[in-house]
Image (cartoon, rainbow, N blue to C red; front, side):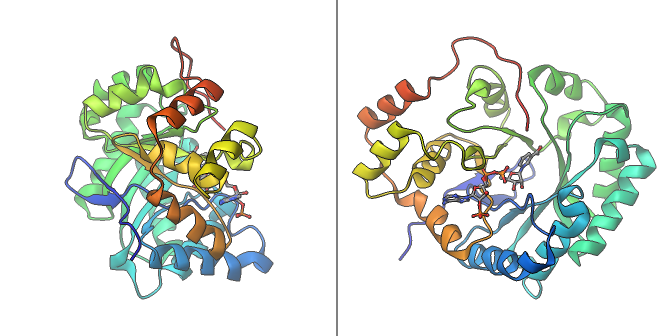
Length: 281
Ligand code: NDP
């Protein structure tokens, strides 16, 4: 019955839903574990089968929550995890990945990202990623919080062109990447993963977002997510620990916004007129 979630294709041919699920702040409090697992499971049932996590979240706890949520259904989901920059040496990356695999209870991470740039040379991290790919422990690798200049530099290192994704801060109130990074990635068919797509809830009280959403009997969160889903090659990963909100977020795919209302949204949340350095949370 539900409208299908659009798909985004990775350079290696893997297709994933453009709407997935985040896990930041999960696995921090045992009292919340049940709700977190139920919410992720509900999201998977609704087709949000891409799950984004990291060794950082809950100090490994989020990966354990994901492991619980995907038990018995590994082949239904596409798992994204991330290595800390200070672990991203040749051997450190491999070790960190193995620990993540253990916590996730699986033998493969579909997409493994460098969480942000650190002091280990990119060439070393990329070499480690390629080793992990060759051994089948990861399906593909990518980066996070890389601005256009970082991406250019990455393409200059051996195998750097194998980068499969760049995960960055992108939402209505953070449109800077539309000026150069987003078109740069789109023109090279490198998917962009939009993190904090509802600005961790902070944009939901914006009067114009509320007004336009109401006109469609939608919620501000749904409109904010629909805005991102409009873009080619963008994967949106809202986080929620509530199954009801997972369903609400999933329903954003049914919104059909008029050009006039997109323009009203542009007026309230203007696109960038010049290059802005990439912001991060
Ligand atoms: P989001 O923009 O996804 O917002 C999450 C917050 O919004 C939570 O507090 C959640 O609360 C609430 N929320 C979710 N859905 C709704 C809704 N429909 N209505 C009202 N409130 C809602 O922020 P995140 O920072 O979590 O970003 C998403 C994911 O992106 C992360 O979880 C993580 O996986 C990834 N990320 C990656 C980063 C990187 O550096 N690569 C940095 C930041 C995030 P509740 O759970 O109670 O529903």
